[in-house]
Image 1 (cartoon, one colour):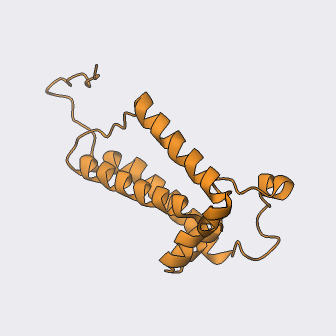
Image 2 (image 1 turned 120 degrees about the vertical axis):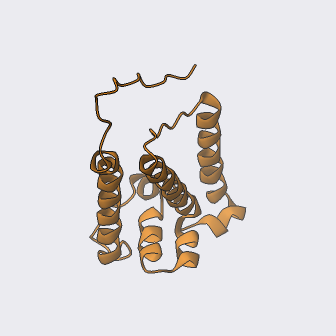
Length: 146
């Protein structure tokens, strides 16, 4: 069952363009600032970021291992190195960029953006992350090591 927004009275103005774009613009600014910081402060240099506790304690790669190095490589235009560091994170960055673009297009048209994830979507996402984590820690999954 889909919830629809209540209709506004005819004399009530709708949200202005500034209101419609405020949240997507704020999110873009925050993500751009985070990527800029990771682009400037190299995660490959020791002492800038905390070590991954799972890797440190067990020697196992978590699904996020290599994500910062991958973001650093992506900021510097090296897609191959970024995919090598964490292919799942790169796919996640691309998915977020697509969703953000859809959000902005819908805002430009004055339509709300709603992301409705059902159980099947969440279970699929969990299965992909789990499979990625397991494969990257198996001997034949060396190509997924950061």
